Image (cartoon, rainbow over all chains, first blue to last red; front, side):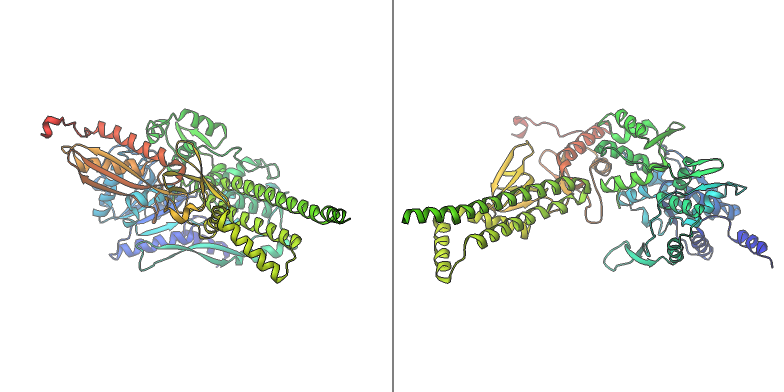
Length: 349
Length: 269
């Protein structure tokens, strides 16, 4: 069998979902278990732009005939029941569950209805959630009890980031200017490992040290100065993006002028002054939802303060952007926002 | 001739030693101030870990002053056993008669620094004063009260008065918010609204350790709803309480949940 045939066969058995093969297989396993009578709803968690929708779309393609797919792109305000026809399908895929609630008084009724339906339905629910929204709502409504299988999307490696970005280009005629400093990667990396303790209801995540075997060769290459410009560019993009595919693509777009990719002039985003509390709160709400309108933000502020100066400041700092009437975080600003808001405890853990 | 010798001794030995001692204490003072300033300023960049950074300040101050005193003693006093006993006796008498409070303050300062009944950044109640600890010195502790008064409390007070620390070295602290509703009001709906007001507050922080509860209590003319929740930065304590109260009241009005009715004296009778 030729190598092309092997690749084609593998692609057929595992549709292209760069970086998330393990997660894809885990969900396949959960679906098989559901078919044999064990139902365990799934929550796929990830930061904005981390590829949650991509994974869910790939799954939907795989189970097209036995599933129902719902995608939420804005806040669901009215209590509405999922149609019975949806329940007739054994698998229900729901993308963007963070839109089922709003952080305001009375903003959880739709989610409450939804959770009630999840609990009473015999269908398997495979859902995606913005990680910040999940961390918030699990403290408020204990959603993890309805979704016992939690899948966190891992960051992409350099190679996966390269695949992810270059899959949009047919001809590899690109010219890379990789005049960037690359730090030697650490031999050890820490990954969260859930440990179930007898006296705690929910698992505790302990940082488990792992040896970066993939990177050992890279260290040797680096020492020998054998890295090509292309390798350097993707390594740097992955590092700057924290392995987030959406952020990586945004950095790529900013430094790409056909046919040249020049990271030399790319400067990561900096915040000139610390954010005011109110600004940080509004920024947190935007990051938590993905896309949110001005009216919804005003409701989240609860009439306590005008959000106009906040939006103006965040827009002028290029931390957020307005797309189709909704405010979103700039992908390039995501890691900075993450760091700032974790420190300010706007994002809960 | 004798006078000349004594004067020469003063000029040649005692004055240089005094100058040395003064210089050493000035250096120690400046060093302590600079390090305190840098650490307190830097701590603001550590977000919720700022109190941990600030905890180092009093310990460093004590170390710096202890080293300064040791250097001075080493340079000034070269004591024999008899002189040491005599010096100790005099020192003890001085403490007993005149420097009792000052010495108690220093001991109090050392205890505060090492035993940490409270730390810089804590909200404490000592005696009649309540406020945020902004400075821990060897002699006294300074707090800023909610009405922006700068209060200096001698450190020896910790021996005689109980100290309540609302946050015990953490940035988050518990706040208690009370609202009162009429007995005829829909209590279940009121609790639902009150819960929402808490979990959607921009100041509230919920974790495994920092959870919130709502208690109800029937009073003579009202039902009291009491929420206990954690504010994510103790500096927002009052703003958090006010914000939750305001938003709850507005939502109660919209939902037709009314405050307790006023009863006149005649009705009571």
